Length: 185
Length: 113
Image 1 (cartoon, each protein chain N blue to C red):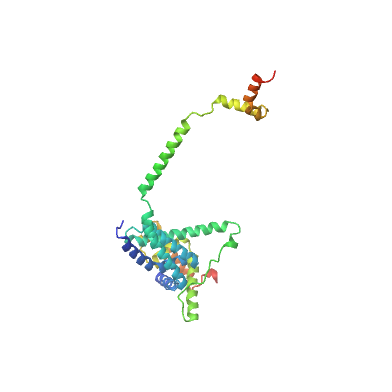
Image 2 (cartoon, chains in turn red, green):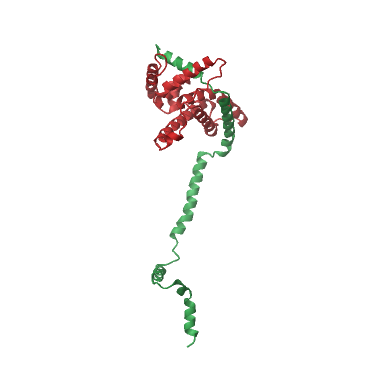
């Protein structure tokens, strides 16, 4: 428990969230493939971190935040799986795939290439089991260590190593030639 | 791609291009502000675990204090009354007759004849 005055904690938490928000969004977007869902999940994770762990030591925030976010992403996928079993859900289910947001570029061709690459990566990641996606993104994108990834996901370090190795191997297959997953050709 | 590092590098470069647009950025800013408000609210509103446990225990004790005497108290209606009530209900005599029973008793004593 950290006992800084509230204004100081507020300032520190603001700086922390500002530093994480874009990366967290990219991570959530890669695992949901829907920008609105990704934003909702990041927003909810920020709220939960502040409400429940805002008074914890600042050094703990990163792991806590990504643990919350990954749990929310897991819940999101469970809900979607359940939702797909319900009758008439297809008619109400929104489109899964949205164009990648991307930075607005002055060159439309370049922008299209960037969007295409993001989409290819999202498609390749979507072919992995959720746990492999989580492990891969925390290790490769967030640059967490094996121990940090294990702590963030609440699993053993040996599992992290296995999931990571399998994820890389599969992604290498999927993005091997021109980057389009074989199944999507 | 030749090595694992190539895969990782490509994924990193690809995901780095996936940045929120202006509108999404605004939503993230708003989310941040809400989270900061929640920090203040959370401080005031979230009770400590031991306090929550204490409140729950006190609630159970209060409920027990209310329920135990009520369960142990003898019922105001005895078994004989219950049998009488059943007989009245199943006799087929209109209930008004029983309501006016005192009147009929008085009539018998003081009536003509």
